[in-house]
Amino acid sequence: MILFIKSMVSGYRRRDGVRVAAYERADAFASRAHAGQYRKGPGHVPYVQHPRAVAAILRDEAGITDRETLIAALLHDTIEDTGTSHGELVRLFGQVVADTVAELTNEVKPADGKTASQIRHAGKMSARAAHIKIADKTANMRDIINIPPPWTSARKRQYYDDARAVVAAMPTRHAKLDELFNQIYLTGINKI
Image 1 (cartoon, helix red, strand yellow):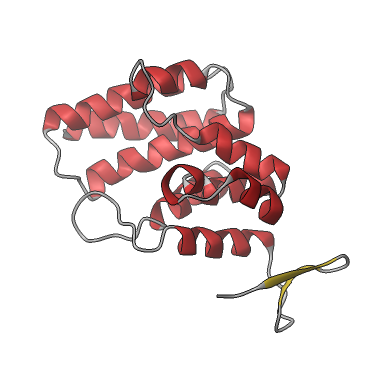
Image 2 (cartoon, rainbow, N blue to C red; image 1 turned 120 degrees about the vertical axis):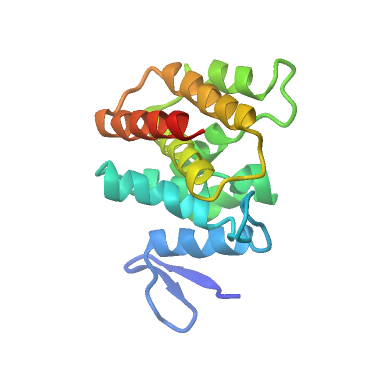
C-alpha cells in the first residue's frame, strides 16, 4: 500500500517523495477499492474500468476539465459498492468530491424501486453530479453493446429506456453529453 503525506507546498507526495496528482491518486484509490470486482458480462473485465470509462467520456469526449468532476467520476461507485465512507473521501479528496460521490450513490433498497428513485433524485442533482450520471449511463449502455451481460433483449431494452428516463429528469443539460447519450441510446435500441 502506498502511503501519502500532505505537503502544504507541493500537494500530495508518496512517502518516497514522488509527487502524485489528485487524479492519479483517485484512480489508484478506485483501483484498490474495486479490487476483486468485475463487470457483468463476458471477459472478466475489472470493475475499475467502468469509472475510468466514465471519467474518459467526461474529459476526452465532452471536454469537461473540472478537477472535482473528474475525480468524483473515478470514485462515483466507491461509497455504494466498496464500503468506502463519505468521511474517508472528504479526508482524501475534499468535501466537494465526497459530496458529489454521495449524491451519485443509490439508495440501498428504495421503496419505489431503483429506477423511480433515480428519476426522483435526478431532478435535484447538481450540475457536477448530473454530468457524471449521464456519462455513467452512457458508459453502461456502451458496455451492454460491446461486452453484453447475460440479459434478455427485453432486459437490455428496459435498461436503455430507464436510463433515458433518468437523464430526461435532470434539470442540468450539457450539449455534448446529451449528444453522446442520444447516439448510444439510438445505436443500442437498433442493435438490441
